[in-house]
Length: 390
Ligand code: NAD
Image 1: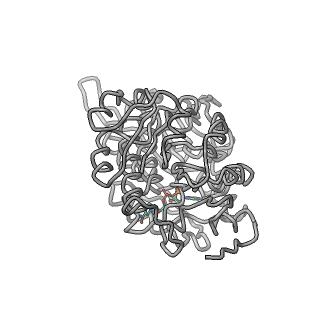
Image 2: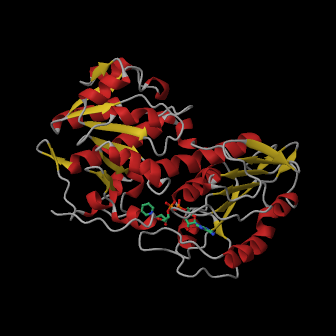
């Protein structure tokens, strides 16, 4: 089967779905790879590196879509709500499309994708099982976002992170508070610690406490308990407004006491909870920094503006989105490895194994044969359950 990699078209997106190093693995598994000219250049992978590894460079996007049976993208239409729609006429029945699709975003968009007949897979829906761990693109990207968030905070803060004892006196270490200790949060803790900050963290999932402590962070306990804090897939669950109000009240002190607050608290398919109010920002020392990794989902800080950096009461609030794209070389490498693991699992002897009894296939496949074919997505959008004859 021919795999096609178009150049990413979302404005500012620098990642690419496949990197040269994985191509020999794919070739060995029986795939041929075509890559749109320049697709990897912004991530640090020139065309010649792809051809060296056995891929063929194709000059236009339409050619990639027409020649390939499998299209690999980072941001497909769905997650790419700016330029992604232009790909719809290029998709065709039976073609496989794999990438970030924002499957719990807009049902109209999913229906448009379904109508092309393409068989699409959303990497966001990868089950969190041991078997699927190597295919978990969400975790790969979250890791890089956590890392990059700390670096952004460090260059913005008018202080340094490490404690220094010098002839000019002692400098106290920077204080970093991480709200939400999932994959991104844990990487933020580790990165901030490496830079010498004193790090504390909070998550409503009690299981996070041990992970925070194992990275050398102090776990902030709040006198409030979430109801069923964690779902079967390991994600935090949505709580009622009363819970969030109490959280805000209890978090105020920890927020005010820190130089940097990094927020990552999200719930799949829901707007992010507001955990830092404008009043809480006012209580922070001037020069403090908030990096809101939930910005794209509405933000954990009331003042966050998605995609922007603002200053309020002397506090810089960074709402930049798509941070993984700011480290495109390694983001692409990790993503390409995730996709390679997925593809070699999905396609056997040149044939996609679209077996609905297989958990990985069932959970990630979003559209097939003109329909939204994913039970979780259908339930989320309150569509009637799909009846399949096979
Ligand atoms: P996520 O990105 O969905 O959310 C980030 C964090 O925000 C989560 O830890 C969540 O509990 C927290 N959160 C949500 N609402 C909150 C609130 N109101 N207050 C405080 N915290 C709140 O989650 P994630 O980073 O994808 O990971 C969640 C868990 O899944 C982690 O324990 C992670 O280690 C685990 N995980 C397991 C696998 C696997 O088993 N293969 C893979 C990836 C992640």
